[in-house]
Each structure stands twice: as C-alpha cells, then as structure tokens.
Length: 299
Image 1 (cartoon, one colour):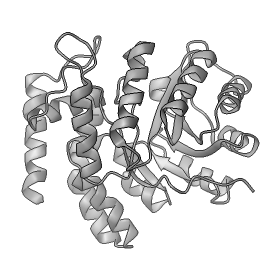
Image 2 (spheres, helix red, strand yellow; image 1 turned 90 degrees about the vertical axis):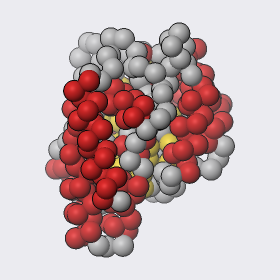
Image 3 (cartoon, helix red, strand yellow; image 1 turned 180 degrees about the vertical axis):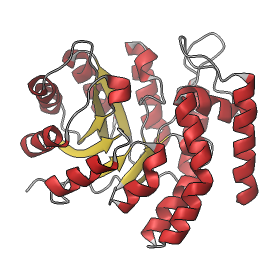
Image 4 (cartoon, rainbow, N blue to C red; image 1 turned 45 degrees about the vertical axis):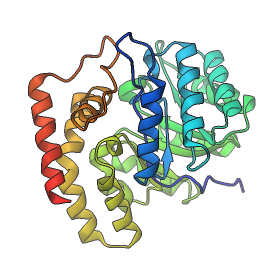
C-alpha cells in the first residue's frame, strides 16, 4: 500500500502575489504577508494558486515567487507550490523548480485550451510525477482550469501514480468528496477548495481546507478546524455561519481582487491585481469593510 501524505492537514493558506506600483513583484511585502500567515496559525502555505495569480506571472516571476515563499516559510510549515500550465513541459519545469527550492509538495492543476481526454490528463500527471519525487496534490477546479476530473479518474491516477497522495476538490459538490472517500476506502486524503463548503467538507472527513481567507481573517478558519478537532459540531456550525457572508463575498468578487482589497483595509498594501483583473470598486470596498468589521466585533 502506498504511503499517504499525513503532514498536510488543517488550514492551508494561499498567499496573494503582491505588486509594486511599477508592476514588478513586491517580494518585501510577500515576506511580510507570509510571516503574518505563519504567526497567525496557518498549518501550511500554498503559494502560486489562483489567489496568487499564477496564471498572470511569467516564468521568471513565477520562479521568484516560488523561491521567495519557500525561503520566507523557512521550514516552519509545509509548503505546497501550485503548478499549472497549458503544456506538460512547462508544468514539469515548474515542478522541478519547486522541488529544487525546497517545496514539500506540489499542487497540480491541469489547464485546458483544447478539451483533454482522460488519457491525456493521466499522462500529464504521470510525466510530472516521473520528473520529481515530491508528493502531488491533484487539484480539481473546472471553474478556472476548464477541466473537470471525475472521482473515478482521480482514483485511477491515485492507484497508478505513486507520487499522487492527495486531492483538492473545488467543484463545490460535496458528493464528490463522499465518493472519493468511498472509492479510496479512506486512503486518499481530500481537501476542500470551496469556501462555502467548508463546514460540510470537514463533516465529510476532509483533511484540510485550502483557502485564501486567513490572509484577512486568520482566526476564523482556525476556529472552525479546531471545533471539528474537538468534535464540537454546534460550535463549528456557529463559527462557520458567522464567517460565511465574508467567504461568499470574497469568492464572488474574485480571490486576488477581494483579498488584496481586504489587506489594504488592514494596512498592508499589496498593490492591485494584474490586468485584466481590476481592483475592488468603491461599493465593494465598503461592503468588505463592513463584513470585516462585523467579524471583528464577534472576536
């Protein structure tokens, strides 16, 4: 039986990628943000996901962010680097960069222009796995990638590819998580990637919650996870529904856009998201400020 990845659990936080007014990567602010996330209790850091605007970075920028993030965490927490690209060759290149820089795992999101067959998806993962020795988190997010991987395909890859040891499910369909759990006989750790589904996902046995929320409300996701760890479902429900309006707002408004706006409201200017993304408008900023204020009163 293959060994699964037991070190990755709890609240796995996506940092944003900060920019200077010139449009260059702001590594100083990235370091400050990661220090804040580590200090505030995140259980792992996952740079270069969709929140980190990975798609909008060139190869040099992507490498700088990966290396700087791993260096800033400094082995205090596990680091899962997001690897996504249209081509298998460039995904392999990025996986190797992450491994060399000291990542603990990679999260692989296949991206589609042409519709990919199951065999093409399988081979994409297999070739990445052959190129590195890192554990691989399969990332299913059809809303951003254009690819929806069935539980059956994910299980096929899990059984056949040694490096594949985790799956992040972001479809927002709780039945996907239940099916993965049943098909894998509880041998494949799954992680929730849909903020509004966090309560149901933990109840279904999710090993963790991959989320950008701790950038601006670090204590609330942790309270939810801790409530489940203590088998306190009434507290878990209470904590979840108090933060749900904010979770829904940041998802609807776009994670890079809303998280950067929230950080700015809290005194950390990470710059605007990269075009074609736009900063949060004035009405949205007022709404976000109200939601953050409401949660602050409840602390």
